[in-house]
Amino acid sequence: MMVEERLSLRVHSCRFMSQLLVTGGAGFVGSHTCLALLQANHRLVVLDNYVNSSADSLERVCDLVGLKDRDALKVVQGDVRSPDDLNRVFQLSDKPIEAVLHFAGLKAVGESISSPLHYWDINVTGTRCLLQAMQSYGCKTIVFSSSATLYGSPKTLPITENSLVDPTNTYGNTKAAVERLLRDLVASEDSWRVACLRYFNPVGAHPSGTIGESPQGIPNNLFPVITKVALGQIDKLKIFGGDWPTEDGTAVRDYIHVMDLAEGHCFALELLQREDPQLLVMNLGTGTGYSVLEVVKAFEKACGVNVPYEIINRRPGDVACTIADPTLAQKKLGWRTKFSLDAMCLHSWSWQKDNPNGYIN
Ligand code: WQD
Image (cartoon, rainbow, N blue to C red; front, side, top):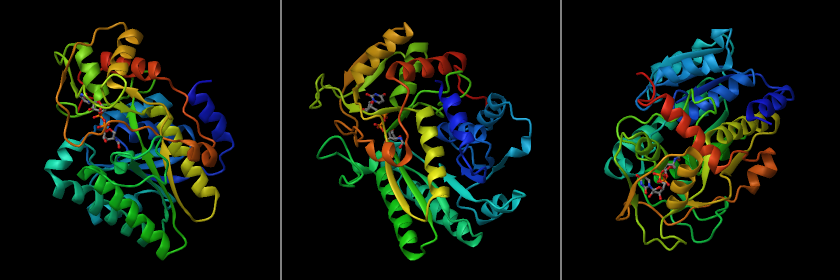
């Protein structure tokens, strides 16, 4: 059963069609989650500054959903650090905003190491400003886009939510800091409902190829580099390290399809709205790891293309292997990933082929 069908089936059991704020809703994970939320008949206000996204993604989301009532998705170009912009979004909707899904933030590991002040400002100060606005408007439900990067180099595998939080880069530090702020907030007022979703590696695209990952400039992440090599826009994939302590010497990650990730957000929101105030911290991953070379081979086989590569030195901030233990999310949310590595390859390739230059800015 397709994700959309399953989600729409689940939707009918969903009692909360809410007015939501989605920060960073024009981004990669944000836009796919907006699609799932609209399919669940929620009404959205999106706040996005388009620094690493495009308004085009939300236009396409509306088309994919076949949205008739365009008031169900209102978009404000602005910044989570701006009290004026936050006031605009909280006053924009005819119904009070009942919950926030917070995606707005920067996420490039290498860039974070060279620009710590910028990353702490956007990711941490931005979240503090958002929470202050939420508090002043009486909105105390938030789903936070956290990251498995905060685990750093895991001591044991697979990684559970009780594994040591020990980031090895600025990006991970900012995610850990926001989680601590949220923990303090829940401890200070028992009316907050908070879910920190620790993503592993989001990849893929909507099966239609209409929305997908559209990094500005040279991509940092593996999948967009592979699709651009396959398209001929980049001459070869540089694999960072062939001497990791893994089966084939290349680093292992837990890649999760962005549609599975979007569904996990919908289920986490539903649980927060259904249950008493609480702090939820959950891993969103598949529980299966693949090395870079395994991904390259799977991509070539699934898509019938060639991905030339060269193994070079390791990248600063990288770790050998991260694999999720997703059992808590499976138990608490009744959520399970559905898309295979082949689907992740096929859907990201379909998006890239149809959109060689990503979204039109
Ligand atoms: C994956 C593997 C690289 C590019 C990032 C960030 C963050 C997070 C998940 C949300 C690694 C290797 C990559 C390349 C390569 N997202 N690689 N050549 O660093 O695991 O995590 O994504 O929180 O954005 O933490 O993802 O895709 O950059 O790298 O060999 O040109 O591919 O070394 O082993 P990463 P990635």
